[in-house]
Length: 590
Image (cartoon, rainbow, N blue to C red; front, side):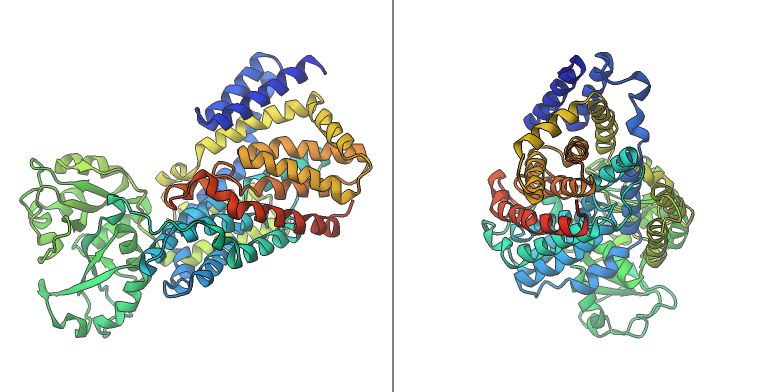
């Protein structure tokens, strides 16, 4: 073993140990290891930051931005509002949500897919009066499974395709992962839907945080030429219930209607009085194409491409707005800001929102230009609440967002354009068509993941160049000497899967893929089945909450303990091995 190999193995051992310890964040650990590798001379200086320009890193960043654009455009509402129903049985709900999330995860980052579906699942569980812990883990597992089926579904696939291009001269294409990943995903989803969820301990409904329970009295207006003009208010109840919004009144000509509002026929300019959380309010507005209830709403909507932001602030005793109304203060014309709703510690508000006198302690839901939120908060003299990433859905651009993304995927799949370029064009198009404000672009990139990738890729390349991966591969080949092909692939899959359960799956793919290629070279067979084995195994992290970020995301909201994951995860991983190895040998023969 050479000096460089010893140093690199020591670096990787230290990195893995630090990641397992969890005392420091993974991006800091990886970047520190990269710098140390350069100082010790095992990573060439001119290649130190090559990982940040690596196609895998660029694709991961662009996929996250595109995913945010699909959410902001309201494209996801087209699916969830139509299909999700709280009255369904638990098994049917898990199967449906699992199918939706798997399909979404195949075409957008699986972390982003979970992030946008998790609130829907929590809301459905609350409506059905059941523990959200019974459905969040299956949802997380489903998004992980769905990501296995395409190139852009999960970072390990992107990394493995890039390593194949560097090593063999040609990358995997968009749907090359589908035969094996699709089989694993279908089998996994069937298990999760029929059996897996029954293995999760039911600890009863989780107590929601005060922030999650905060509901506002708000108003939305019927715009000109609306499809709802002429309908009774009661005809909107079903849509309101689906969005978890309560219609509690109607305002016409500045006067609040009581009692008979349910049977009132809607007219242009009528304002619906609603009780809802911010996310539900925006979903309802987007679904029914309603307007913000304020005289300045059209001017603000015109500026939507420059970026609108929904913020929450608390009125203090000394706040400028305390004891006054938004209309009397001139909030709209002075600050180009709309008071969307007021939350008053459970007490009902009987006046129009903009004509309601604000009291100390009220939580105000404000719609303002993105670059003015801090100024507006300071001008009002209010205290800002922690940002929840609330956005204004550009609901009239859902099909445009879907069409642009679909065109890019199709062009990349047919080999007409390089995938990173295609995704980059989608991002540019989203900005030009005002689907995504340019000020929002960099907020949706997970910079810690970018730093992890940019740091680990040069280290992985150095390990391969030094002959370190060849040593590992030879050890595995000797371990499996004389065994049939399926047994060799099984050992590689189990080893990679075990690493992925305790480490970041991205780091696992960077280390394991070169090992798989070297094993194939030693055995003088095609490297593709080995790469596919690593691809499936690196993503199949179901035993712990730390192996995959999706599992970590549901840990708190689901009320899970560290040891809960293996109950469903262990049989699922065994099933993945059982169905993937035969599929690999069929579709990617040695």
